[in-house]
Length: 142
Image (cartoon, helix red, strand yellow):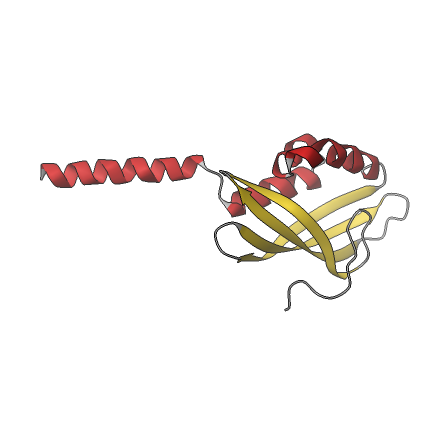
């Protein structure tokens, strides 16, 4: 009985330490929520440290016209324990135009220590979106 109790307590401690580390889906959600609600400094915590300042500057500049109204995580595709590709669907408009667009993008995420960082984001299909890289070929097939 005592051994079983110790095992349960130790297993609980191990599970608690796992919850202290952000998992990929939490990191993806926090980043995209930050971008959607223009909390760029908060979103930048998911960007590699050497790119964070430029990310915030670029997003602040784009936010004068670009509004993201919604996003949806379409697919989360782990590639081992240290990399993942995430497909998101963004609804957005330019304040100067007022037309709502839909764009699918693929984000590449890498695990560095305990943190997940978004290291690349490209347009997969849909309307061309300001600030979203264009690359030939598809990164993720439907």
